[in-house]
Length: 396
Ligand SMILES: Cc1ncc(COP(=O)(O)O)c(C=O)c1O
Image (tube, rainbow, N blue to C red; front, side, top):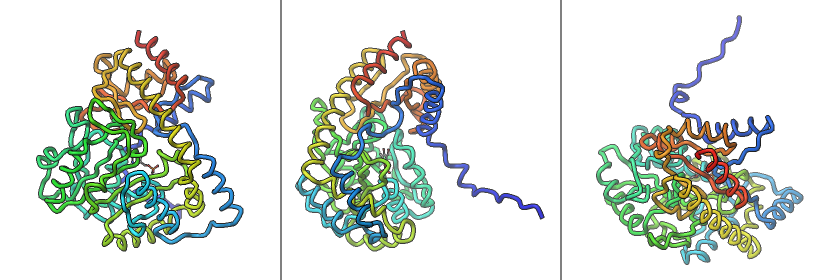
């Protein structure tokens, strides 16, 4: 009998392609044809892991330390992360509440599976990191996006949470600084939002993957130093990662900080879904916290800030409307209404006609999709300047 391929599950119809990754594929195809492409689409540092991390990986590999670790992660690494919070933020975090994960992606997956029941609604910003909707949906939850604009720094606040909270809402997924806007929540909004959610019996998942890349915006009262939401409450799920601050995207390593009573539930999920994060990556990550690595990371952060200070005025000069200075991450969220072209067409034509690859707003939400684009400025200054020149000539 001839075999027939089984039908895929219905949920596949609800998973939109991650357009950033699709765009990267198109840009790479152009490069294969010999075109010069400037990649400003993918959200990934152009730097690689600091040298002490590479050395730690080589040693671990040589010593064969590649067996599974405990599900919660290497105790030494959990202690190192706790010590990092103490050093950088004066925060006393219990290493037993830290869970090492396969990147922030696995951290957010675990958090949603641990907290969301089928049918539960979770509030997210529109625009936000595209995968967030799918982490919630994977747990059977319903992502409820709230359209936000520059008046709230493209973030939720207590007022927006109150007006969008329904009987089915169970919690919020926040990110500060955020992707795609690069803007942080005001500290008062962090505190008031947490109170607004917790007073309703809800959970807060706070994605702090870009906390280590904050340059601040003095005019908006946004500081340049990390300031975890843990300062406001310990009853949160904090998500973080080695991907962005430590320039280790492909190493797939991140962490969670969770309230102590929730650790066993997260541990069970981690055991069953992932067993543990990569053992070799965990050994290597111990190298992140040496003085040498910290100095490298601080120097690179200064480079990111210099790039921001080049691209934002550069794009504004060309005619992009950037209502807020992005105070963190390596993104600029720019309005293109003035150019009279819808953002998917704009980014497609920009790639074809200038070789500069950026992402259309549609990847990050619905309400502002047509008029907005995201630039990732994780590129050397000279490359950013070249991109600005190409875009200026094209638009002229
Ligand atoms: C806001 C945000 N959260 C999570 C992630 C996923 O990061 P990771 O590489 O640690 O899985 C990203 C990646 O771009 C992101 O921008």
